[in-house]
Structure formats: structure tokens, C-alpha cells
Amino acid sequence: MKEVILSRLMQNTGEFIPGEMLGAGLNVSRTAVWKCVRKLKNEGYVIMSSSRKGYRLVSTPDLLNVCEISNYLNTDYIGRQIKHFDIIDSTNSAARKSAEEGCPEGTVVTAESQTSGRGRLGRQWSSPGKLGIWMSVVLKPLITPEEVRVITLAASVAVVAGIKNTTGIKTGIKWPNDIILDNRKVCGILTEMNSEIERVNFLILGIGLNVNQEQGDFPPELHNKAISLKMHAQRRGMAEAGFKRSMIAAGILSELEINYKKVKAGDTDDIIAGWKLHSVTLGKKVGLIAKNIEYRGVATDITRGGKLVISCNDGITREIVSGEVSVKGIMEDPEADMNDN
Ligand code: BT5
Image (cartoon, rainbow, N blue to C red):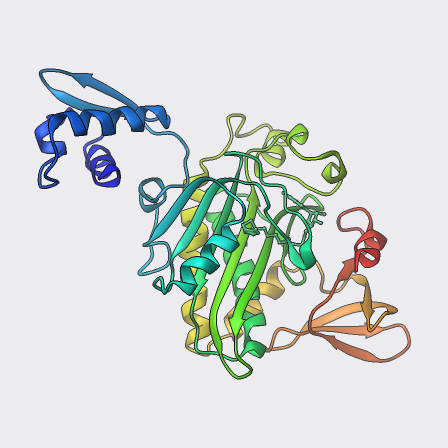
């Protein structure tokens, strides 16, 4: 009911709507409508009430709920169903639960903050309240687990395009899933799957994007590694007040659907080309660890299947499927990543 009332208010922003019209067809009393409006006001919506004229929406808060995101969304199915939480352990865990319960493909889980946001290999993801985009998308592609890699690449390309389209900020991609801004990490992507040997049952694509944090909002250990879009913009004397997260989230979801449709149609050349275009890894000196052995070399290419090609100093060219690759000069401390694993 709250969502219907909010969307009616939003469709008529700036105009008064009588209480009966707001609740029309919902089979609810005027008091129930009033209580609902009070709940919305508590969430940060500024709504004027007049006993004669009804209710008028004056301004909306920056929340990652379905009404706010739908306002900017341009998709057929990704993000058409959104489960929004004020606080949750991890949107990836909630999305997995929804997928297990049979939610439709494209369902998105968003949260204003996460208490146990996670990265790969059990690492923590800092997710403070209302400052970033913490969201997970449920996908059900008819592919093998092998092919999932390309979807992570497609998601990286979508994040870069979504950020560019909505804020004008250009970011880069560090293989395979870090989005980099001013040599620091602005976004991480965590792909988790439920699969059998030959077939993926569902994928959870978790996206964590730092939007409006200030330096002090990050834990000290991330001060040299992490950045938000707002910190970048402030350095350039723009966007003092921060960015609208719902608009950026919708921009990313819209780009994600475009890329996901390409992957489903077997058209991955475009994705790989987009990835190469924005890569901060290709052409750089890299370090990598494979089977506990450390190699150094230069990243030269990415294969159609999403493997990173490294021309190693020992004269051998290796294709890397996963694992950590540190890029010299990106995120200050290339050795740290290598020792993490
Ligand atoms: C990632 O892991 O980069 C994937 C992060 C995915 C987070 C999203 S949020 C929505 C969804 N729900 C979840 O529970 N997770 C996903 P990885 O490559 O392993 O990087 C983790 C490392 O990044 C940490 O060990 C820190 O060094 C660093 N880190 C943690 N929080 C950060 C932040 N907010 N910004 C930048 N770096 C961060």
C-alpha cells in the first residue's frame, strides 16, 4: 500500500491530491492513508498536508527503494522488482534467499546499510548507511559455470557506463572486478552462483559502489585504498552536496540489462571490447600468484572467454582465470593484494 501511495504522490509531484484519491482502489480508510503518509514523512519524504486539499509531495529523500529507482529506470526486467532494506547483513545473502524461493530473474535487493557486507574470499566490505549503493541482482542465465566470468566482465562495463551516464565521471576497470577512480577502489563486484557441473541455476551479482562517503566514513585501513564519487568530485570543485544514489543505481541497472542481453545472445565481442577500452590492467606491469608461485609480467590481452593473458618474465604466456592480479601503481600497494591470498 505504501508503494502505491508513494507512486501516486510522485506522479503528481507539486500538486495536492485528496486523501480519498490517494487511497482509491486500495480499500483503506482515510486514517490508514494518513498513517501511511506519516510513515513516509518519517523516512524523509517532505509531504504537505491540508485537511481541505489533501497531500502534496514536496521533496523525496535519496533512498534505494523501488519508487526512487523506478523513477530513473529504463529496463524490461532488471530492477522491476526491488526488495529494499534499511539495514541487512548482506544484500547478496538476501538475494540468494529470494532466488532459492523462486523470485523472478532481474529481482534486485538493495540496502541502505549492510552489517556484514562481503567481498571475495570472506573479505569484508565497508557499507555505511545511506552513503553508497549496496545492491544485488538475481540472474538466471542458461550458461555453464565456465561462462559466468563474462557476466562479471559485463557487469564491470555496465558499472563504468552507468557511472559515466549519470555523473559524468570516468572510471577504469582493474581485472577482473574492481572499478577504479584516481588509482583507488570506488566499486567492487561479487559474483556468487548456485550451479551444477554443467548448468548455472542462478547467479547473484553483488555491486558495492561508494557514492557519498567522505574520507572519514571509511575505516582507517581503507584510507589509501578507497574513494567515493563525491570525494573525487569535491577534489574537482563539483557536487559538494553529493550524488543521487537512486539515479546512479538505475543507470547501472539499465546498462547491466543491455550488456546481459548481449551475453545471452552470445554477443560477447562488444563486452570484451568495452572491458578493454576501460581497462587499467592491460599494458601494465602486473604480479600474480598461481598455485602459490609468484610471477611478474605484463598483462597483454583478455580472451573472448574472459581470461587475462599475461606475458610473464620467465618467457611463458599465461592465461589467468581467477585469483589476484596486482597492477603496479594501482591502489598504492601491489604486494598487499598478493599477500592477502
Ligand atoms: C569485492 O571484493 O570487491 C566485492 C565487493 C562487493 C560488495 C557488494 S555490496 C552489495 C553486495 N552484498 C555483499 O555482501 N557484497 C556485495 P574483493 O575484491 O574481495 O575486495 C574486498 C576488499 O576491498 C577488502 O578486503 C578491502 O580491502 C576493500 N574494501 C572493503 N570495503 C571497501 C569499500 N567500501 N570501498 C573500497 N574498498 C573496500
